[in-house]
Amino acid sequence: MIFYNLVTKVKNNRKILLNLFLIFLIYEFVIYLLTFLTNYHGLRAPLENFSLIASLVRWDSFHYLHIINNGYIYPNMAFFPLYPLLVKSFNLFIGNIILSGLIISWVSLFLAIFFLFKLIILKFKDKDIAYLSIIFLLIFPFAIFYSTFYTEALFLFLTIAAFYFSERKNWLLVGLFSCLASATRIFGILLFVVFLLVYLADRKFSLKKIDKKLLFLLLAPLGLVFYMIFLQIKFGDPFIFLKAQKEWASWGAFTVPWRTLPRQFRLLFDFNLLKNISVSAYFAHFRDFFFWPIFLICSIFVTKLMGWRYALYNFLTLLITSFKFPMMSANRYLMVLFPVYILLAVWSKNQIVRFFIFFFFACLFFFYTTLFIKGGFVG
Image (cartoon, rainbow, N blue to C red; front, side, top):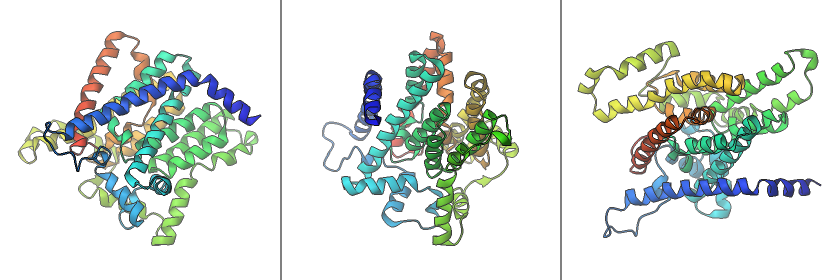
């Protein structure tokens, strides 16, 4: 019976799966075409040492590779264990670590857009909004990270799946996906906070209405808990990952949001800063902060459009990213806030708005993708 139901669901979703797979293939083709064109300088350029997949291994990718090959040493415990664990396990069958990591990212991205489609259909019953949301997600200026040796695609998939099953009231799967998310990035623990409040709100915060399903939800923080147990056994400090976070942010400072945000805002208009740093460094500050207020404003509208659980998740993520000055890599942490893409898709029923968002995203997408492939720091 279970097998029959699974086959029936696959048949019913066949057209959707094919459409999403086509979108996914086109997206990846564009990524690798850009990778090839960026690295190939003329017809006479030697291609013997050229590798498409190796060209997408940049920056934090090397830290994950080091963990996979050598295990955890200080301070790389700032990078959570699920992605390197999956890559190392998958590599037993593939025999190529980089390819194994990219396959994990590819599969995660496809599953992410599939569950995003299902979630939007469940809430809005509108395929146009679903497809447009996916397109906006894929051409977001920093979407290159979904197809690289990074955790963005995996975390996005686990997060969207958790929200999808929360709408279905399947608390076991909510707990499992949230657990995996909390073992992928520190932001995953926010899912436990959000879904615990959702569970309690569904029961009017009445202790008498709490049932055994709460035990399923308590799975959510176990990804982080087990990682902390591992760190206690290996390093004698379960919170060493927080100290390691400060190590990676040694050129910045951990502070409080009401100090970070005004300082970051003033930094954008401090043109005297150009006398002390390069133009590219100045625009890096602009890049890191630019989307924060945009996502904040959008999250306010998400509250009415999708409900408080989605807005709360966005607000908590925005809050955590504002505890560091300068807000380096904030764009990477914000790009997985999928409710914003749904909001933009709803707003894009106006063709002028749709064209503006698409053009703006696409231009920056091509720019930052090319910059990343060349080895530039994007986030």
